[in-house]
Image 1 (cartoon, rainbow, N blue to C red):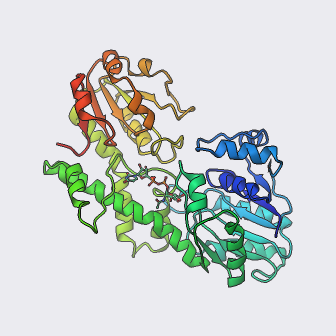
Image 2: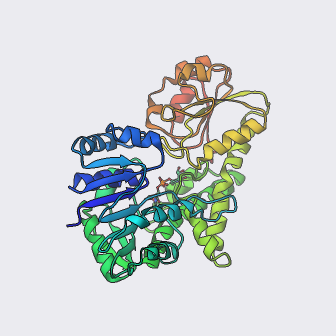
Length: 417
Ligand code: SAJ
């Protein structure tokens, strides 16, 4: 068994993967440029919110199976798990992948395995990773084995899904795919399918595009139902009673570093063929403005105070990347609303308030931006007393209308009559 693994990038995917492999007996070196991540890791701590990850990291660091370094080192297996964001023109920014691959070149030796995990445009493994690794003068596929193994885990359930989900491995040749599959088999209980790199790259993009397009359909339905004075939630509920229909939930937009980004990689490579995909992205990106329009229907006076509960891109995580609520806050501020923000998951965001009662003091309207579970335990009666007005706009269909109306709130769920 190849023993030493170097994981480049200790984010939401790299760190759990590194910890999981360390827990399986590999000696793992985690590499990151962020000093805070490394300092914490080497003390057995993490700086992201992810259930059970803290315990696992603590265990493998104490057992000396995982250490953090700021540069790569010699290893038998290299895993690249760095971000692949989009730039302002909605094109893939591959700088992190390129830098990470360059950073391992001088450490890769004959017999080693190099795996890309970062969600990437189709062709990345053969057209970006391979040419860089050729600088080693080793023959790709014969002297070193190269492939793509995209992550598939849902933030909030990462450790469970890392183990249970099926995986797809794309090898630069069959031998590479088989060797890579073997490594993941050390902790994956799901099936591992092997294929070529481009098929694996496309599969990953399609998975997230499928979700984005389907959410866009529900968001469009919300607008249509609003316009025809029909409750979209009833329509979705009844439609989903059909055995082959499964409409997703409309909401304030689609956030996160995956669904809001990956479909653009397909648009970039096939601009004339990806109409539905592009329109879905635009539809989902239009939702914060549509939420603003819903706010304006509730309170027309500017200079009013609005409190936002929850700003992450989805519930029970601390991640605000591409969060549609952040976009909504921007629009509200541009329109002179006074905004106060409460989110117990987010520590560092300008203006965030950690005392709920102070936050809602004098507010005209409460917007439920994200349905964090802890919001169910809020004493809304006390909140109402502290507020100036009595309006709630629920963008997530998360609260009990009857209960809130009983205590004196005027409750508006987006897409309801
Ligand atoms: N959302 C809706 N309506 C829905 C479902 C989601 O508006 O019915 C919104 C959420 O509020 C959120 C966004 O979509 O803003 C994305 O949330 P999510 O929970 O669906 O997905 P992510 O981004 O947390 O994780 C996804 C997952 N992909 C799929 O479900 C296809 C995960 O399996 C991937 O591994 C991950 O992206 C990734 O890294 O690619």
